[in-house]
Image 1: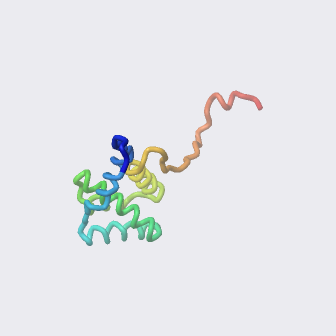
Image 2: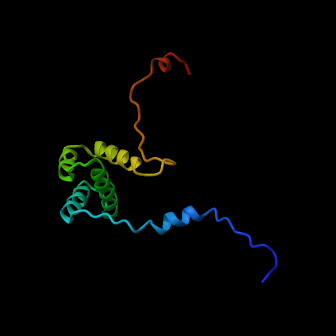
Image 3: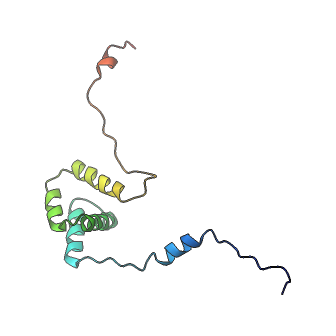
Length: 121
């Protein structure tokens, strides 16, 4: 025991601790037929199992936020080419991840620019 006045320690990480204490409490559930359909769709399009599960999770989550029927969403994605599907999946994943990085792919431009043709190298 000390005769000094007690000091309160200001814990700057208290908000962070409270956030992570509540992190896994809220559960989200989807019907099993929707989960199987979305995972199966991506596996049939050439995605590996883990990629299909990750992408399906984000797609189900976004469909719930937008209040869109998952089966209608899969039907609209059915007729897309691999490149179009990859672009849409990258866009959806980018909306659902932190903004410090983005997913994407490079598309080469096949058009010659007018200015480039006039330069003699």
